[in-house]
Image (cartoon, rainbow, N blue to C red):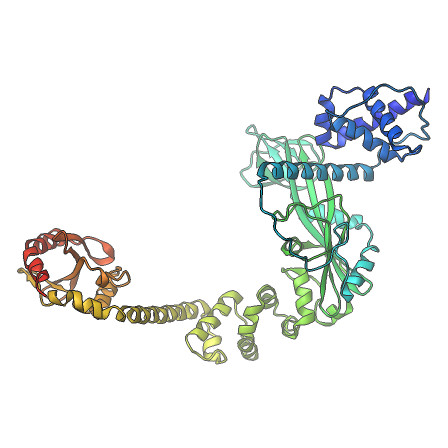
Length: 564
């Protein structure tokens, strides 16, 4: 076989395999009008222009992919030449995974470019703020502190995760599904085999592989799920939590497909200082937008790193001796693993709680350090009295209410109740009453600023009383009367400062026993009632009668308006 023919065959085999692994490339490859001769001719011209005689396999393959990706690319005139091919190459599984990562990166870059073009607008030039940390020319943060330098050196020593960790993650962390049609035909997403199931439960056990499956009543043939898991390791006297993204693909009639990538590494030294190495991020707002083709290098810690690290941890882990000394042993608690380890190393109170075996308190206070500051003295007193709350969140809230109500939060009488729920509700009501009183006082203080204007404008109407055999209607003649009216009937006549409305006169309707019925707003401009409201702004059975009675005495009110 001639060298050129052999070269064409290799290029075509590579592009065919690439199309099988890369969905984005597959779409372009299937619709391209270019022949393999066009691709090879483009490679010849690119090599000629470079002035080099030797190229690596990936460099040549990249030229071939570029010729397919860019339909408007100039191919050039045909050339006659021979190519020396030293071996036959077939993609390994690692190379396939690398190509998938590269394809994902290309897709993200293309989408970002489209988004930038769509949203681009002329903007005034602005000075760029200086970053907190100096970055290298490749975007990697330079190590400045002692722990950053130590982490940068140790980061290169980590190897691939054990197959046992991946097997555990697939079995215990990832979801397992069963596709069921309306005819009760089921397909196991784990092994791809078929069976019948007419049960009404949400799960079923596959009769072929024995896997417990979650039933999905759907006609979809493909389902993708993603989750995170982590492992704890020790290297160079540093505790590291390695966080991985696991992606499972279920296709009807086929076994489950698995892909995984390492997203970030959270490092912790014996003094409780933290550093992060991670892959680069493309779209910072979204959690999963990592550049999976980038290297894991030193980065500034951000919310995403801490968020994805709050996940399942492989149960067979290694810890620093200082962590074991401070109480972390056996099964990890149901809380953020890195926050727990950092808290145990830096806060002696967390170490004390952990060693006392109060695991609920540890899980609660790990995520709420400010609550620990408030409740620590109360917690010590409660512990001495052998009291452990059934609900730590409810107990901490009760301590806050006691403090706001001015009670002694170190008194066992208050902080060790037998019925925690009832005690919490009692002090909640007490606090609400205090707040209502405080707000009323503040409202009255604001109202006093307008009291002089109120008496100046409305004193001429004081003393007007409208009566019939059952009702007594009188003008509200003080700010205290407005406040009492609003509190009694639960409406906003005082809060909304109706006393300050120049065009309105407010009256109150009572029965013969003095019980409040409705509050009336009379317009001095229109000379009639514009609204009348009873309890909680509702209309009472006396509503129409009250409105007619006040409107009938409108001349008496308007006559008072003319007096100075």
